[in-house]
Length: 336
Length: 263
Ligand SMILES: Nc1ncnc2c1ncn2[C@@H]1O[C@H](COP(=O)(O)OP(=O)(O)OP(=O)(O)O)[C@@H](O)[C@H]1O
Ligand SMILES: [Mg+2]
Image 1 (cartoon, rainbow over the protein chains, first blue to last red):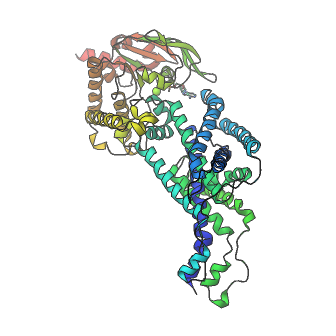
Image 2 (image 1 turned 30 degrees about the vertical axis):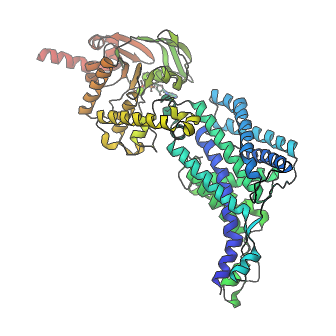
Image 3 (image 1 turned 180 degrees about the horizontal axis):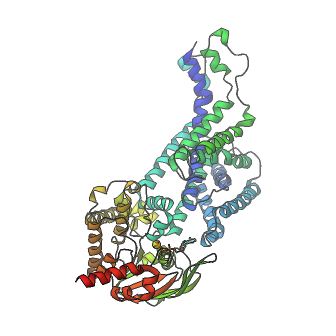
């Protein structure tokens, strides 16, 4: 038995990847949950909003790179991020002006807004593919690793290596900063309080003189920021491919719903629940088991519950379970 | 002040407000009475912009305000309370009151970052104001309680408190007294009179409590089945045959006679 090596293997293959993925999902789910809380519909275009914001950032990153601008050991994409957010915000505000605002005016039912967002999704989908193409794009630069498996082994003398990619560390740090800023904004500033008030009781908020259009506009700005950041972090960590962002919609919605739609804290918890489940269910536990169990019991198979091809089934299963037993989610959101 | 002309509000085939016309004089405290389901709350909802009217017109000081959204009406000085108390449940009672005055400096994103001092000053003033209102409503001890957790009657007080946070021109009160104890009801009555006299608020008050209406309202309007039945002083209303039939019932008439006989 070798707990130390088992723990290192666990960290390397499960904990670290799941934390990074969970942070990305949490940021994505926060955007979905804010739209649900304030505009009261499930925004199916969120995955493609992420793709659009990321695409804008990728293009600006490439331009920066061609100009020889770099951010030292950090990815140039972080420099391009604010510009990407601005471009994404412009698009999102444009769609609100052009599409959603009309449905708000006529007081359309939420399902109509959902359908409209489906349309927006297809348009953004096409737009991204038209501009950057459907293929995989790499835009990460700077240092790849903070610690490589080899270095770690040399440092500790353990037989198991632990690699920490710089993108994973950047993801976690960025997510913490963004979430802290968001909660400060929602709880401490007057604009944030207006948003919470509007989400809590729309009628009363209106009768208290809160301008709904301003609340909606600020919400879209924040959502554009969250979506672009989540998308860029995911892209840096893996790679940028429009279709993967469309696929991310499922785990992101699962996170938001599991946590409780409309509840920001829930979105974060949901993101990590989904990420950990997905990684743990699709991880081959043979190695970790080999360290912990006595030799005679060492498993022959991979001890993998599900192939990674089925990882989306995990979000789906968790989503179903939560909807069946606790429809308002873990953190008491609005029921769906 | 407010003029309602031939207002209709239909829900499907049901005529909740069915051609109501009335006029609210500036500086008055008008009572609005009528049986359950008469359409009083619906009338309020249409005037306050919560529901669009099916037809008809509402004007405020000569200006057409039909169908304006509630937040726009708020900024014109038209406020209302809800029959079923509404609150921002995750905020404290004090924060609930502090939400009221719209267009605060802190609502501008720009100021959130660059106008910190202005926001801080504004917050301090609002906070003092909110505490004053809570004190007045005898619920200072609830200032830091979550509004979602206080009692029904206390939520009603909070509703009234909201209208005291800004300088309103006209306030529509929908049964603020329901579920509030007697002593407090008197306090509320005094508050209404005081706001009316000192700050010149115009009030429209829906109540089922005739003593309360009698104490503060003149004139009184009686509605039934979506129409205005009668208008006048409470004594006139009480004597109106139609009103007695639709709302007050003969019991009250007898009681009045008994009282006269006893006197
Ligand atoms: N949103 C709605 N949809 C359908 N019918 C409605 C709606 N709102 C009100 N009504 C109906 O309109 C009628 C008038 O309701 P309203 O609430 O205005 O009465 P009210 O005079 O305020 O009565 P109460 O004294 O009980 O408060 C009722 O019969 C009610 O059922
Ligand atoms: Mg009513």
